Image (tube, rainbow, N blue to C red; front, side, top):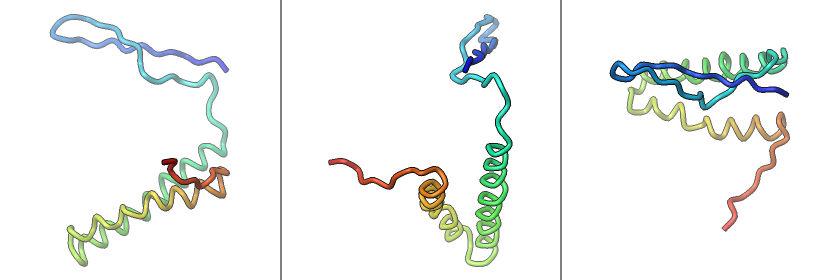
Length: 93
């Protein structure tokens, strides 16, 4: 797989500088399954969390609304284990 390297040109106090980007672009577009997975994560999971967040702001108040984002790491584990085959391990001592 070839990788396209990007260069960014910006002006710093009148001087023109070019720097390499810390990322690269793939040589082909993502597969439809990848786009679907991003859509599910972006629309459904984030939409559900933000809906819960705004509901909590109006009902119990903004101090309790932050609790809506606490389950996010648990969702990552629950989704990553069966769908990506990631093992659940402990931190080595």
